[in-house]
Amino acid sequence: MDFTFTPEQEVYRGKLRASLEKNSAEAFGRKGDGPSSSTANQLDVLDDRRWSQLLDYHRRLYRDGIVALHWPKEWGGGGASMIEQAIYQDEALRLGLPLYGANQLAIDRIGPTLMHLGTEEQKKRHLHKMLTGEQIWCQGYSEPNAGSDLAGLQTRAVLDGDTFVVNGQKVWTSLAHRADWQVLLVRTDPSAPKHKGISYLLVDMHSPGITVRPLVQITGDAGFNEVFYDNVRVPKENLVGELNAGWQVSIATLMYERVSGGTRHPVERTIGELIDLAKTVEFQGVPATSHPYVRQKLAQFATEGRCLRLSRYRSLTSQLKGKLPGVESSFGKLFGSELNLRVAMFADEMLGPYGALAPGSLGAVEGGRWMNRTLAARAFTIAAGSSEIQHNIIGERVLKLPKG
Ligand SMILES: Cc1cc2nc3c(=O)[nH]c(=O)nc-3n(C[C@H](O)[C@H](O)[C@H](O)COP(=O)(O)OP(=O)(O)OC[C@H]3O[C@@H](n4cnc5c(N)ncnc54)[C@H](O)[C@@H]3O)c2cc1C
Image 1 (tube, rainbow, N blue to C red):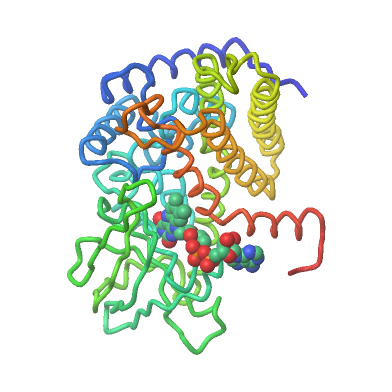
Image 2: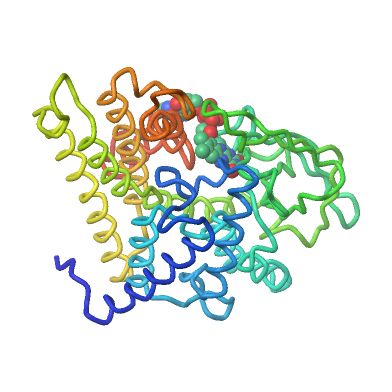
């Protein structure tokens, strides 16, 4: 397998790198300093100031025509080849930048779902505004009693003339407090088997009857939300796909989510930062980089980070040969999120008691960011299907183990 890029592809890389470095420096104030190198794309951790910087960054990417390289030109995207997309991902992750500006959900999964399954009217109304950032989107799937078992959802929508009337509750909705629109899974036929009575709606988040309540996370940030629906009226033309066939539409969205989920972590960058950290601290009374345990750990992480990237290239090669992304998206998601967690936890181990100091505390190393990362890293192992669920998928589909 040849992992080298052609001279033309390296020229393309150079142009992208220049654009990303310039835009991020202008929007975020410091060269290559994205929202957070360990939580790029974890948009919900941003306060108001960082959010407006991110919107600014988004508009710059849009102006340079790189906010949605993978979208077809017909819909305002870059029409980039898969190799060009891989180069873009490498460069954005290297800088710790979110792949799709401020509109991650819209650009990586909701927009592509609409392109395939939406009506012409829905495409015209939403796709362009996703790119410009005029419509920020969130995803209303999970409920208090429906997460891994998503098909158990209970939020109801009843057709009343030309509108659905929605009642119920969603939870863990990232960005709901920033969003203008939402994709919402609702139960439209309670008498049907659970996968068959679900519909997929596009909901204006400014509609009367919607209440958004932020949830405070273990890091102290409030980016998740509970969302309540009290007789919310949604026009019938906002249904995507057939009535009661929303499960298939949601699977399409989830497939896009898992495909990007494995590649979303700038984990190699975080490993580089861990190595830099090791050069500045002591471990058990000696410089950390001269301690054999630390050296072994760093080498192991660097190897695993590289394996993850090469594994992504391997998946890309199979897609270039016309194969659909398969179970490797589960592998990438599982391995990337668990590696990210192990790296953050090792930083805490290396820092000893200093690792427990929160940002702002006297003596906190590097502003306390490693403790924050350890707390935040757990989220990646849950979002987009928990590690246990990814193990189940790999066990059943790759190892052909009997269903649990
Ligand atoms: C960072 C982040 C962002 C998120 N953003 C959104 C969002 O924008 N919109 C949205 O709708 N949801 C979102 N979620 C919710 C996410 O999809 C759910 O948390 C996830 O699907 C797990 O569901 P749950 O929390 O209900 O846990 P549960 O499904 O109740 O699981 C609890 C535990 O049981 C385990 N478990 C469950 N079933 C099995 C099984 N069959 N076999 C083995 N173990 C099992 C799980 O792995 C977990 O450890 C987000 C979550 C996170 C962490």
